[in-house]
Length: 189
Image (tube, rainbow, N blue to C red; front, side, top):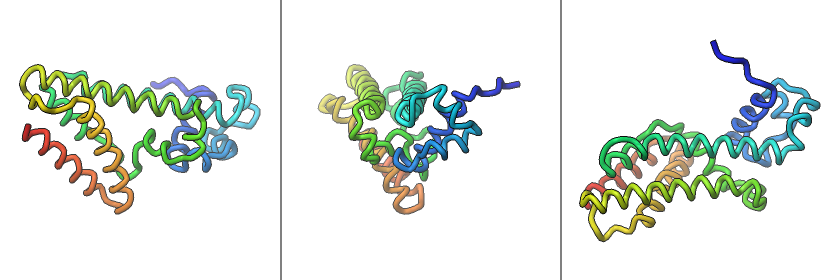
């Protein structure tokens, strides 16, 4: 039996979902309250306002994204196998990345506090991918001429760009194609 969520938890979860669907600008306090089944007083009891609540939601989403990536990248197997597992892991491709989509929101990007968790998680992801690539280079599995930071940036760009292409076409096929293409290039090393 699961423990009922607190009002604070419901507010954060509702905000996470609305940010993913609508972005920061489209996420109104009223919509959050309705989605969470919470009153205005409850929201302002737990959070100082929309920005504070959005920051909590963005941090939670970033933490989950980082943990999901680490579960695969820190797992067993060769460097290539772990990168492949990261690229092929289950995703809601047509919804886009809940963190990456925030980079399209001008208010999030203009606000250093809201942007910080987005920057941090994407930076940690690139750093972790670079470590895995370096492991592959050190073991001789991957070609010595690869630059780990550049390959890490390419992996992140492929995933994020794949989301954009999939959403633009209404099909996950462009995402899958981009992933297969990158894996073929990495396997050829």
